[in-house]
Length: 353
Picture 1 (spheres, helix red, strand yellow):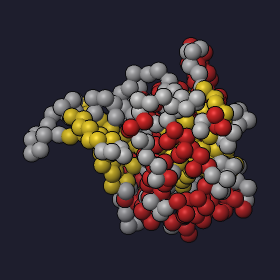
Picture 2 (tube, rainbow, N blue to C red; picture 1 turned 120 degrees about the vertical axis):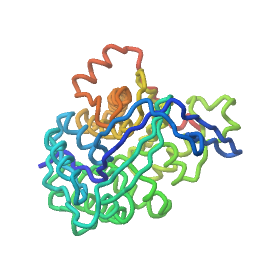
Picture 3 (cartoon, helix red, strand yellow; picture 1 turned 45 degrees about the vertical axis):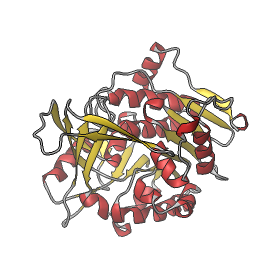
């Protein structure tokens, strides 16, 4: 019996940091966007360079195993040298690799991560075998013998298995956590609302929440006094729209602004835990998987789970790799004890109107 099975992508991540990259902001009436730019046609020096293994399913499985959860993963690897490297790394991390799928036709996923001087990043991704997981390749018997299924973003044709997995979890009373990806969200609210109803926990970032709800964070309210809950009214609307009439615990992450959670009664506002940021890659995976593991361990204590998730996510941000800096539960508790002022605010949802 597994505690968690993760499903999603596996990649070779190549990190490139250049201090000459510029951050360009573009504002519109409904939104503001930022872009990383380099001099066109120029040879640009890089400040740092490294290679690491990554991908949503690999990152979360490694983190869950480090937290002491009995973990396996369902990923698809290509017919190349990375196949054995990823399997070996997972096995050494304590992740059961029996459910890994091998491809004879595709290469393993590959990403180039451009890291800015601010610590944020732009990812150039080749999905490879990640985009070709089929229903017949998934070991549903292993899923049946797991207490939780954690679905990280699925790409390409692999997204077609999400509906089947969600139904299977519902029919077999398996807890389902979904870290939504853009491929699924682009299918629209009608499609994704069916998935939401089967999940116990759904985590997405603010941009993904905007994509599915069509609710944009209005810049014209930025300087206005928010409602009594001191949270942007558009974030409140997003949380309520995502949860709807389900029992799903809904979480929206918002980068350096922290995270928000809604359980149907209260809205939880969790700041980011103090840290010197080196790279934000993998921080979202660390946050969402730690939140799920903490909810399981601490009897669905949302406030405590958000704190633990924020600490572990911050720790990952202090390292260059997406799987560097993972903490155990004891290490997280120790850091929280050193920051007594770190608090999660809890506000009744009916106050946020």
